[in-house]
Image 1 (cartoon, one colour):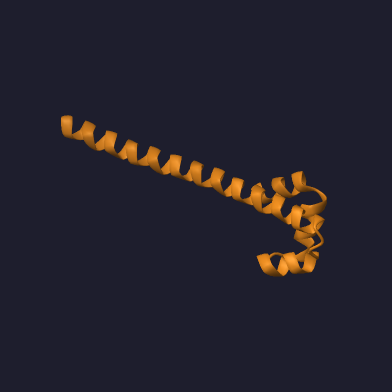
Image 2 (cartoon, one colour):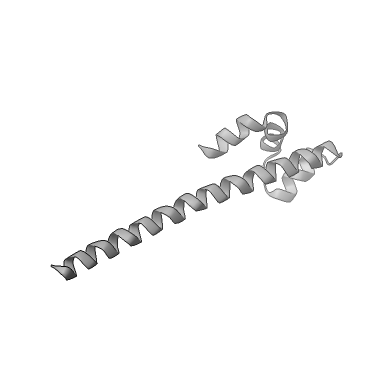
Length: 80
């Protein structure tokens, strides 16, 4: 009985660790994207053309324009 309990508790612990890692990974990814989008807006405000920003980051110019124009909508679309 004790061995069964230890196996079950161990598997549950591993499952929780994986879940927490995934949640932390998503949150970290979200924060990185928010910082990237803020840096895009700042660079554009300082005169860097959209085409240059898109080329340097590997994004499309349309996406960069949408991030610059409406950051809240872009953040929601990236999260989906």
